[in-house]
Amino acid sequence: MGAGHGHKLHFHGHSALHRAPAHLKVLALLGFMVVVVATPRDAYLAFAAYAVLLAVVIGASRVPPAYLLKRTVVELPFVVFAVLLPFVATGPQTEVLGVSVSQHGLEAGVALLIKGTLGVLASLTLAATTEPQDLLLGLERLRVPQQLVQIMAFMVRYLDVVTGEMQRMKVARESRGFSARNPRHWPVLARSAGALFIRSYERGERVHLAMLSRGYTGRMPR
Image 1 (cartoon, helix red, strand yellow):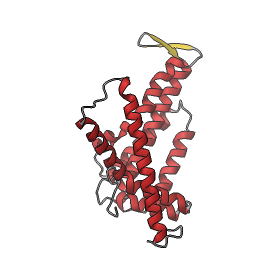
Image 2 (cartoon, helix red, strand yellow):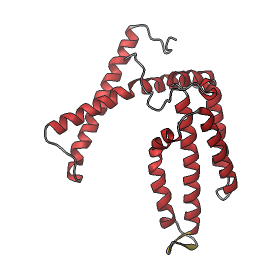
Image 3 (cartoon, helix red, strand yellow):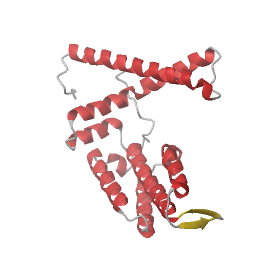
């Protein structure tokens, strides 16, 4: 369990962005996100400038754009919400492709989609150019509370462990002829999720007990 985990977002490279200190990249991402969020939703020229700046950074990182675009699927819930927003919001109405929608909802949905996409791409660029361990060390340099950094470190280490456990449970269900095809099967999936949570919690308790027995005092050794 001491092996490297959580490297699926990292793209191995030797660009200047890869070599930059992690804490500086975190600060740059934080500043970029603050500026993007604070920008008025109708300032489309500013958003275009942010997109160009982000494209330049991605180009300098030498990370293939397709590598990042495939991972923007994490944004899907925000995309769905942005698409629904013009139909559920109130206020003056306007027509888009012959469909009447809320003007305020349309503007808010477009702004949410733009800001969310910029934020996701910037975050993925940070993850693709920074090793998880370097990122954790960078957070320590930024004086992030030590316990919070340790929680993040364990999340990185055991993400693959929990994912592998979930995959084995899926294989076990399928070997017994189970296949989730309709909502009637959701209770089985819910019980599997509950069992996965209990196993993960118990594993965490065992790991913590092992750490205490080896002299853990609240701070991880280098």
